[in-house]
Every structure is written in structure tokens, then in C-alpha cells.
Image 1 (tube, rainbow, N blue to C red):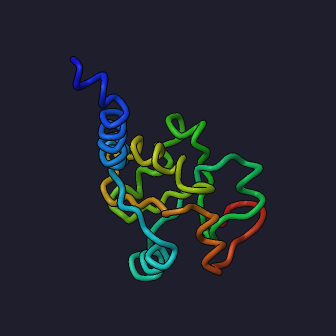
Image 2 (tube, rainbow, N blue to C red):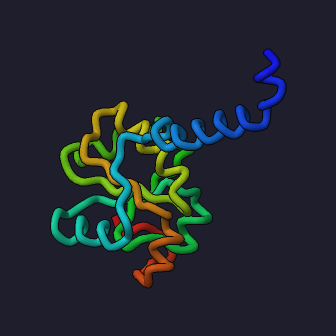
Image 3 (cartoon, one colour):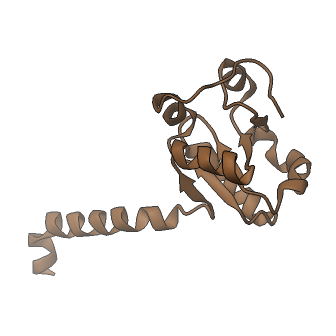
Length: 139
């Protein structure tokens, strides 16, 4: 007990470090993360379908060309719209990559097996110099 009292700070650092190492494994979404360049290859070479899970105001402000808008808040009720893409590559994106991870978990539950999450989201896409489209969806 004396050891614990004398080394409480050291023990806290070890526990925090361990959790930090485990965090990415715990947050796995069932999807590959792809960079904007890798996403472009999937779109051009494998006809990947793009799903943007941001809310309507964000989507209208700028989205990947040909992206289908399916807000995360309505995903469970509208996921059936994407059944025809279950065997195609599916790129899921949001603003920064956080919501797309949640969406990918739901897609995995529904049997989608070629999932990709756009790493860094639309922000990374724009930062890499790729084009965006404003207004309504292309698909």
C-alpha cells in the first residue's frame, strides 16, 4: 500500500498511457480509413459510391462531387436506399471523420462489406486541393 501511495502519479501515467494506446483499437469502425488521394482512386478505378453523412446545411455548403446526402441523424431509417451498393466500395464522409466512423458502424451492422471512411473528412478533401460541389447532390 505504501508503494501505491508513494507512486500514485507514476501509476496514473501508466494507466493513462495504456488507455491512449488502446483507444484507437476500441474506436474501430469496421471501415478502412482512406486519404483523399486513395478515395479518388477508388472513385475512378472501382466506381466507389460516396455517402456524405453531414447535416443538410453543411452538405449544401460544399460536398464531394457525386456524393449522396444521407444525414447521420436519418441513417437508420434511410439506410435501405443504399442496398444496391452493398457489394461496391462505399466511401463515407463527414466534416472531419468523426460522424463517418459512427455511420460506418451502422453500415457494417447492415451488411455493407466494402466500407471506407474518408480520413479527415471533407476538410481534408478541400485541404488536399480536390474539388467540391455546392448545392444539391449529384447522385
